[in-house]
Length: 530
Image 1 (cartoon, helix red, strand yellow):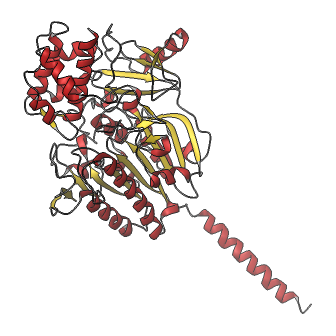
Image 2: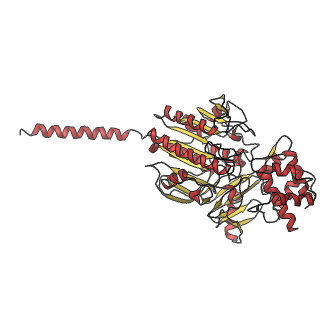
C-alpha cells in the first residue's frame, strides 16, 4: 500500500504528458516557406542533371538528387507570357499576355500568387527582375502585385542589371558601384529578408536576371571567352548559396525551393541534351523553346532522388503553391493550372492529360507523345526535346483537337498554313559566309554592320532588322511590308514565332544580335535550297 502514492504520481504524470501532447497536436503545423526561382533564358540544355552540356551545374544537380526532378515541364517561349502565366495561373489568351509588349499584370483583374499569399499571412518578397509584368521603372508595381518587399532590376534594354547595377529597393532607386554585381546585391537582400521573417512563413519570387544578355563577366570569370557558361555557373553557385543560407537560418526543412526557367536558352552555346542539340530555343514553340527544368527540394517534405514524368506547365505553379501553403484560392478565382503539390509531396496526384503554350497568335497543345499546333501541324515528340517528326495517328490528333477546341472555345483559330518544314540554325553557322550569300542576292548591301552586330551580346536596330526581313521575303514571295514579310518567312520555315519580329523590328526597338544571326543563317539555308 505504501507504493500506491508513487504509482498514482506516475499515472498522473503520464496523463499530464498525454494531455500536453494532445494539445500540441491540435496546433496547426507551420506553413512552409516557398521560394520560387525563375531563371532567365536558361532552358533545359544548360542544366547538367537533365543531360545538358557543356554546362556544369553541381548545386542544382545536388538539389535534384536530394529532391524531385520533373521531366516534362513546359513554359511559354518568351519572358512576358511565361511570367504572366506563372503569376496568374492563366493561359495567355485569357490575360492578353501573349507577347512581351502586352504582358503587364493587373492584379485587380488577375490576382497573383503573392497577392493571395499576402492576404493569408505570408511575408512576400520579389528579387531580381520584374520584367514585362509591369511597366519599366514603375516603382509602385511590386506593391500592387502583392510584394511586401522587393529589390528588382526594372529597366528595359539597359546594361545595368549586372555591373554598375541600378535597382529598385522597396520602391527607391539604388545605384550600385561600378565594381558591384547586381545578382550579389539581390542575394544579400534576400538573406536579410529571410533573417527578418524567419519566425513567420514567407514567399519569395526569385526572378533571377541570370543568364539573360547582355553577356558580361561574372565575379568568377577569368576572361571573356565563355561568358554564357560563366553566367549559368554563377546562377548555379547562387542556388548553392541559397541552400546554405537556409541551413544557417535553420529554415532548410521548412522551405520548399522550386527552380525553373522562363523559356528556352539563348546565346552561344545553346547547349545540348545528352550530346544532341535541341530543336528550337527561346521564342520558338518547338520543344527546345518551351521544355524547362523543374527541380523541387525541401528535406523532410519532398522525397529525395525522385523523378516525375507527369506533364506540367506554368499555369500549374499558382494552384500548386497555394496547396503547399495550405491556402484556399479566393472565391470565384479560376485557374487553367492543375496543382502538382501531391506529386511534390510523394503522392500520385492527378496528372494533367496535356499542356498548352502560346506566343502571339501561335500556340500548341501536347500530351506525352503528340503535339498539335494551332495551324494543324501534328508531330510526334517522343524524342523531345531533340526532335519533332510528322505523326499520322488520327485518333490522337482528334483527341488533342477536341481538347484544344474546348480550351480555346470562343477564341480565334490560328490561320492554317501550308508552309515548309521549319528550318533550324546550323550547329556551327558561318556568319561571314551567310552574309556574303545575302549580299550576292542583294538582300543586304554590305557585311560590316551585320558582322559587328548580329552576334551574341550584340543588338540590331529595329528598322535595320525590318529591312533584312522584308528584303529576304521579297526574294521568296511578294511582300509589301513587315507584317506580310514576317508571314512569308514563317511560311518558308525561316521564322517560327512572328510576334518577336513584329514587336522588335520597328523604329525605337532593337533585336537581339544572336537572334538576328540565327535568322540570317536560316535565310541563307533557304536560299541555298532554292
